[in-house]
Image (tube, rainbow, N blue to C red; front, side):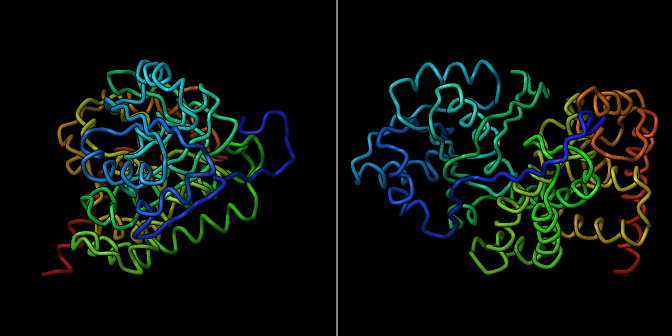
Length: 374
């Protein structure tokens, strides 16, 4: 049951501070000084060259002593334990990079009982603001959610850095963010990630997130391709990062993310970004819950406009078998999965059918779209 103890309290949570703009890293010392002077910075080598060097320079010019440790690529218990052992003489943690780096930094800070700053270098997920991490096996399969007592102390988003990241990352963030309202509106009677019922504020944020994406998503995607910061781009970065982060954590997740987790069982989609799989899971959820064709077309058109996958072929698995899809459905319906937050009937067979139907609907929409272009 989504609320077995019949809790009646409403609960909303968020990071202490959220700062976004094109000079955020340059001004990092101003925003991070409250956390200490000896940070453990974890980022991979690519991110270090793109933005890490500039961050260290900005901090060290203001008297910070930065310990930099490279992130090896997977949010696993092994990686978290390694970084914990290296950060015992630091007074706060900085996670700089993508979703897995950020999730690892949050877990490391929690184990060290230190404050944490999150500096995303893409707007590809809603992970930066949340008080949880998604833990994977060293091989990349979903293992569990790990929950923390507090959200990040500072989320610092440099939109100039994000504008120079591949546009695919922004699109993936939109794939993650478009699920926010779709999922949360089905979780009104379920407990959110804080352990309480969703607030009206969480619902309003989810609605606004979807509004921004549908209004500015395509325009922001094109701005990202041109590597420029525009008003539309700033709005979508905020939707992907802040609105989606607050909306999913305080509003709730449902089938779209559960189906994403199920897809980790198929090796052929491991090359995809989180939000790309969530986007397809969102289509499957819309079908699972009986969404009208007209409404479904709105989401399909949006996804296609920013090159998000809406078919098995676009996912990179054109010859996926029914056996594989049943594995996805089974994992999607595992005990404790977010799919059980919904009030709609859920069985493995229904989820299997929704996933197959999502591919069929996606293929049909593409054919209709091509027909309109002729």
